[in-house]
Amino acid sequence: MNNPSLSEILNIKHPIIMAPMFLVTNTKMVKEAMKAGIAGAIPAHNFRTIEGFELALQELEQAKTEGGAWGVNLIVNRSNPLLNEQLLACLRHQPDFVITSLGDPSGIVESCKPEGIKVFCDVIDSKHARKAEEALADALIAVNNQAGGHLGPYSPEELIPTLKSETNLPVISAGGVGDSEGVQRMLNLGACGVSIGSPFIACEESPVSAEYKKAVIDYGSGDIVTTKKLSGVSCTIIKTPYVEKIGTERNLLETLSHSLPFLKKTIKTLTFYRGMSALRKAAFSATYKTVWCAGPSIDYVKAIVPLRDIVVQLTKSAE
Image (tube, rainbow, N blue to C red; front, side):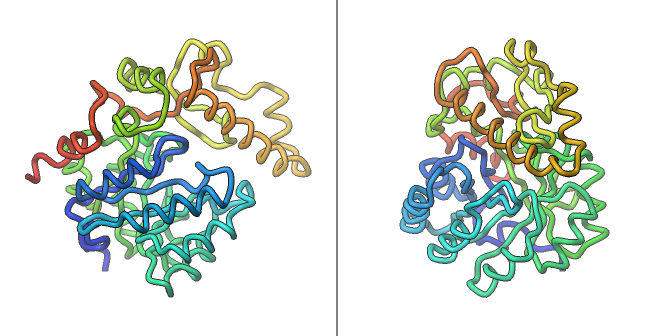
């Protein structure tokens, strides 16, 4: 059946996941999310070493609260050489759920489900959704065209009903939500819950620079552009003066190298690492190379506030 709410699936008060945002989501944010009655997820790729990742998992395992849930996001394609070690660390520390991105989730499902760890799969269309269902995933995260970071081609109004009609898995909507009315709108479309990222970037607990937080407040949805230059796949960033200068389209050499079969995988991996390095430098220090990842829901960010206040804003109609 595909009708349980996310609150029931994860035993949380509100049907919301604070999305795992590269460089942004840290253990402090996830712990505050759990205290506020929602789920929080941390990206494994935020950690350069397995030792650092393991310490974070230990901290979250010890901080688990009643009514909250925590999870981990794993990149499951070839760009992640640490995947096997990250998975083993998850099995040791037992998050409530794992979110898979950018690859075949079947190996993650086979390892996690016997341990009672739920697996949610990022999908952008029905083709990927059916593969996740065949792999026996627990739910789909429907990444729509309003998502921050990596996004899909379809609106939530198109994507959610399609996934519900073509699979029997619960659908969690990801993208474009920044207030309680948006949450309710996704639930009315048939989603069991919502994954929300960009509105949390500028919270007090976020580790990113003051400049990044100020940009999230000062810029709006009209300043969000999409580029493939960072990771090889479509990714949303804020159109800062530096982004305007370098452009969002691949140059001729980049386009040609991505089209050559014998170079494609190598170039894609190198592009991913170079792009992630640029994001890391911009996230934590003042630099003229301001490449900041965010989605259109930064429209809802007006000030730097405690994370719990954002959760109240997202859930006030339910209250």
